[in-house]
Length: 92
Image (cartoon, rainbow, N blue to C red; front, side):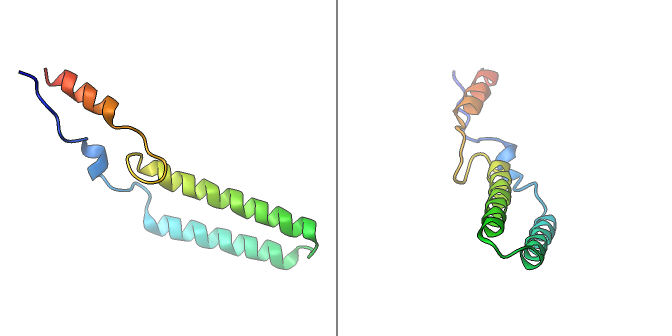
């Protein structure tokens, strides 16, 4: 008799591992940092383009960290099939 495992595991029930106050503090700190760079830097097109590229790369990094914190949901997803296969093998 084959055991069918219907749950995915405790990793989905754990929620996020990133503390919300930490995320708020980091985003606020980065906003102040980029605001001060823009305020005290030169107002030419090269400096503005460099600030925009830096801000986009930092926001992309924060987005990836938040997406990869929950691998089974969101925009970037991994398959749960290998885990279900392993659980089925363990249940034999």
